Length: 303
Length: 161
Image 1 (tube, rainbow over the protein chains, first blue to last red):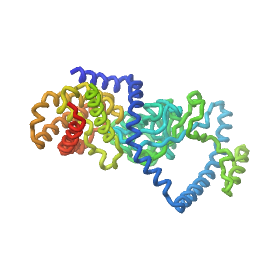
Image 2 (cartoon, rainbow over the protein chains, first blue to last red):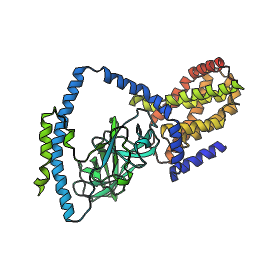
Image 3 (spheres, rainbow over the protein chains, first blue to last red):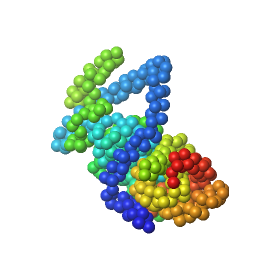
Image 4 (tube, rainbow over the protein chains, first blue to last red):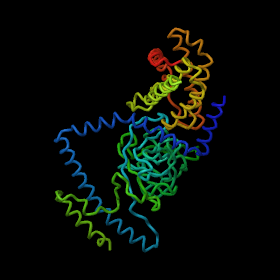
């Protein structure tokens, strides 16, 4: 009887007031060995397949990555000149603009969680400076946010969970709305759009930055289906997340607010996605130098 | 006295293994069919040694399971404490049943646990699980004879009473 009442009390506290984060963090830290054990065979097998993969495969992969790197760098040149121009224009209108978010790569743990909730565990925790509410991205788009931190691991709530809502903006016209999770890994819902709002299939949704948690301007999803029924005040709009929520193995943790950036550098190398330094170009890459030279004059091009 | 301590250790270790099984990565299609390992192991101990494993143990195991699976705190704790309570009330009857009848009894208990979980999910606006949700207790009940025999061996080996 007591246990039942206690359970119900815990349920209400956790669901309504979120007072139990500390308790949950502590317990999660104590159960970390179990998670580690469950994940171990998969980490080991991945390590084994990596160390035993043939040289040809590695060379092949290396070549592919180099090609992709080249392509991305070319795109970056364009981006940098645009950024410089943007900063100058913003200076003209006296509006502040922050660039250079700090990011950290974290690996997913393969531990299975409650199948009816959209959560994942990442193998980076408070030791690396992860904090509650931190935005998590993958290479394509926004994935979710950190909801629970222990020293060595943290739990990420994906944007498709039913309890997650994300302030977004339509890139095409700046229309602001909220994207709510549906509980299905490939679908988001935009429930607060009036029937006459200007939105079409294929529109790209980006974060608006209004919630104060996510940095503005990151891609989220594209609109896949719009049901407008004349008798309903709101149209039901569905969108598909761009992030590979069920496939990504690595995620990016982002720091945008300056005072939350940890002072000591984390053990795993934190990457700065601010302008790529010429030093990162490998000497063997013939185009690396050309690229490094290319970034220099680009700010002038804007004037 | 050291025997009692060792017994507790064995019970905790079996529960830990059950929890490990509860979060072990499985292929996507098999995930909705994961048996309620912790419930099954806990039920065995509650039926075999009701004076050692009680509602409190069920509650604690439930809390740990909630934290491990990222469920709402108390979701499994509620179900497990209710189910251990019923199991302890009925342990003398369940013990003398033949296997298939035991499995039926266990099935009822597993369904009760699952139902309580479903209520919690429903009350907190979670995703309504599909019909496969009810296959889980069935799988658990089919697994019961094996779990019973294995854990009985463990219990006799370590002479826990």
